[in-house]
Image (cartoon, rainbow, N blue to C red; front, side):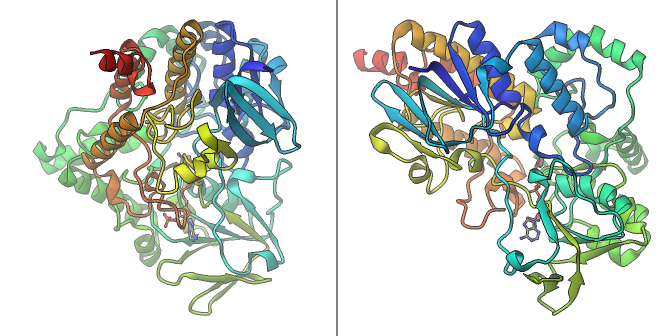
Length: 535
Ligand code: NA7
């Protein structure tokens, strides 16, 4: 064996997995396709790339010394700052010596006593346990638009942005997509480009981020308060350190309701959503909230027709991942920005000179940007060929949609652990919080397996029960109402429509995982099953 554990990926997940497993005495090797650490934050270098969670809690909690030492500069960390942070963590914990960079995994095959992982150059490495840390939003989704290969300008997906940047100064730039990424990139591109054309299919809600530099006093107060901040995160539904309000807006008179929403709008960011209770479960509360946000668009955008096109009417607020922005709607008041509604007049083709719509309208472009998102959650795992027991292929096993136990393990794939896999609450949670929980749980499981010599494999029954629980949790919310959401796999043509993340809340999920471990991992075919059989 080359290692006890091979971890694929050196982003937030892979780095912490390496640190934790190594400290428990596992010989651990990380394989990473990029030439440095960072994962998502290594690749997503598009203009305006920034995290929507606030910096003081979008970071690791496992190392109190690191919390005290690191100095965040802004309320929301930019891509380069997060990359620097992860580089610092790698150095502080001497992680690089166990990471092989520039190695893309092509396949992973289950053998009798472990896994053989083969990279795209044909080099194989053997390990007993395989841990995937490949991210949830890392497989770029480039739409299959006829003519793309003939485009005479340059085009880029935001998640694969060139490292030396893209010169858009004075150029005619087009951008497809108005999700979180497009909404971050559009204001910055508009400032740099000669002209920016935004091709919008679905209008989106967005809340001002209210980004600002962090003062010494704010950082000092945060640092002094970390233990209680972390405690709130652990007990929360989504890993953020703020508690959802218990105010029922429907009980408030109109003026107080308005006041409440205005105050939340001023606070900005993901805290807006926490200002009212039941926004994702009560359709009436959601409608009132959505209306407030729709009105804001009309207030900000000068041209009424543009404002109307920008106003979301087809899905309730926050049923698609709610973006936050810095000057997004204001951008449409600029002379050099045009909004094109490709729901009304769909994209027909890309030509040598630009974009052609079904009406025959032509939009000449020098640069085309795809902010078209990702094949979320399953895409990164299916990007390489994983073969389990008896040669079963994961692509085959998940043909009709993914099935996992707790998002952490898959029936037919012994001793494989998937950090933030489909069925976990990861993408609905502050990501580092979810990641630390997953890694800690996997680390405990591996210690158990090392001690007992057992092999862990999710049982089909446990998978069925967990799938039912994931579906139940989603149905209890308004989330499935957004028909084109990537939560449902609906953004990728041909992808099975299954609600992918667990929407029952982070704290509940953590408890479920803890119960699974305390019971001896019955859902992974261990003590629980034996107890049942002997009973
Ligand atoms: P998203 O949220 O999946 O957004 C992708 C956007 O691209 C969205 O507006 C899509 O419209 C649009 N899109 C995708 N394909 C097409 C085609 N073929 N034609 C026109 N428009 C298209 O991805 P993001 O990168 O913004 O965000 C992903 C997550 O990363 C984010 O939620 C954070 O968690 C971080 P649609 O809505 O499907 O009509």
